[in-house]
Image (tube, rainbow, N blue to C red):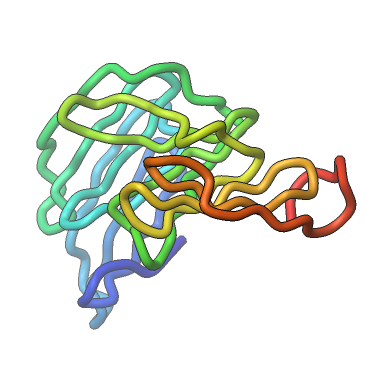
Length: 154
């Protein structure tokens, strides 16, 4: 369950169903999809992640906009979205990856990390092994030790 979008819609999802209610509690979207792992609201779309596919639905009416194959996604992972860059959802699993479209693909920003948080396209906070780094498309901007070296997750 999560709220999303400028209207404050509520997304309720548990395989195989997903439902979206508007702020007044009225049903906006209902769909059934087999085998999804998680869902993220990205712009005016709902991105439905499966183990090897990404389905993009309209957040307004639930119509399917695209169904594309995608590199393997860890089935134990989940979407993480930054409030500063919600258009760049990160799949956090054994190896976090950002999911992009046009074409649909996964990529690891910079050298990657155990936690990846987008600030904007081309700027990422990466945490790994006790180090927090700001990664830009031209390389590392800074690095700061945080927490215990070798521990998992901040």
